[in-house]
Length: 388
Image (tube, rainbow, N blue to C red):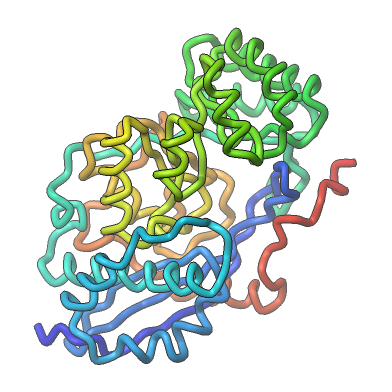
């Protein structure tokens, strides 16, 4: 194998959800992403994905041009060493560049594993499990392309019950921070009655509750057996103070592990591969979580390429034994053949083919590119007028 990069291709894509859901910042319409393919001089292709559709322009331009001609192993090691230095999830030039390069690094891992004819999990130390666990998701949802949504607490609870009936779902996670707290706590109580006392129930406030709201809600959340509350407030300092008196564990999307653990503001980190700077950065972040006594799971919203990468990381990492978040059942499309991944009984099989184990569906990519050209990047901050 020559091992030199000959070409980098990148496409901005949109994939809408079956029904947009409401969360504290606004309305989540679907996924806007960059899909990329790196090809070596030998014709071996590796796939990557980044969380911003705007990365495509950089990867088609100077950023992509800078990696052409580099050896796969050398560049992969260089990007892996550089990963994991971010201290914020907010967009900016340095963060955008790091996340675009994380997509390249993902593709280079795919190339190396494909060249060896083994699944990515083998390069990561070997699989310790063949399936990854995922939660079902629930939220207030507005009518969308292929689902009517859920407008009331009874609708949300009925949806969760239907997921148990149809798919045997063992764990659930849902959005709060959208409607008045008393109304949402009543919704959570209805969901608990619908799913029974033994299934996992997590909540995500997306920083939408005040410290006083959280303080008042915690006794009821404890009584309802809530297993985790994600990002209860916008302030890590306030969250840390609340955590000291809460029996409900907290989780965070913050990437500044040192600050979060110093404050003792969260028990778990919920990120994706791009947020950690790539595959190598994700592995280091998970190891650091272990040293700090914190847990880790992946958040939802990735398309099939990054989801496959997360599946291999779960397969090869003994510590990743808690369910990751999943919006997968709500996708209307994907960019990989036979996508999207969909959990049954709360589990998704890890791809067994070489590399990431997924192949690009070029027709589906073209659909996603056409949507992005027509719609632009999905606006997550469009407000809740659709349900008002």
